[in-house]
Length: 242
Image (cartoon, rainbow, N blue to C red; front, side, top):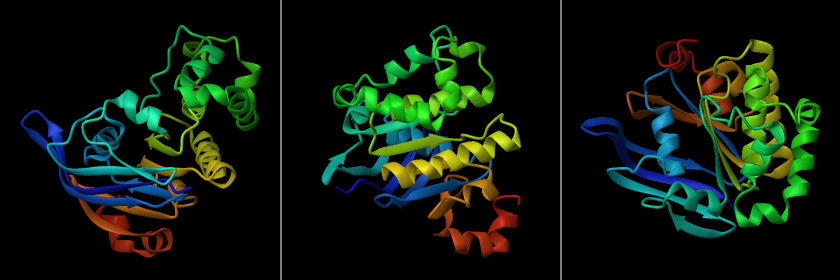
C-alpha cells in the first residue's frame, strides 16, 4: 500500500518572520528524498510543518498512508504520529533520565505500534546491536552517536509508514555519520519506508537518496535525481558549499 507526501504552495514562519515561501515538494512511495541546504534556509521549518509542530500560514500538506489520503494542516502532532508519520528530530530530544529500553517503549505509544512492539524491538536491536547491549543504561549517559541510534530506533518503534529525519549527522564524527546514513538506506530496503531527510552532508546523503531538493532562503531552487544533483557543479558550489 502506498505512502507518500505532497506539499503545495507552503508558506510558514515564526510570528512576523516568514521562513518558507511557496514550497512545492513530493515524496513518492518507498523513496528516500533529501532536503538539502545550509543552515538557516528552512529545512527544519519544513520538516516541522509536516510533523504538525508548526502550522503553515498558507498552502497544503497532504499524506497518503496505506492508500488513504489525509490533510495534515491543522492536525496535532500526536494525530500525525498516529497516522504513521514519525519524526527523528534534530538534537535527538531523548529522555536522558530514562533507560534505552524505556525510551524505545515510549516510541511505541500509538495503538498500532503496540501490536508489533516486540517485532519492532527485535528489528531495532538487530540494526543497532549497541542498543541491545545498553538496554538498562540511561540515555543521557550515552555518546552522541549512540543517542542518534536511539532516536532513530525510537521512531521505528512507532511502526511508521513515513519517516521524517532532521539533520541526523549534526555533531557526529564522520565515521558515525556514514554508519547512520547506511542504516537509513537499509531501512528503506528492508521496510519499504518512505523517507524525507533534511541534511547538510551532501556527499553522504546522495549515497542513499533517490532524489533531492535544494532549499535556499525558504524557496526550492533546484530539484532532481541523485545523479543530477551529484553532477551539477553549479548547484554544489552556489547552494551547498561543496
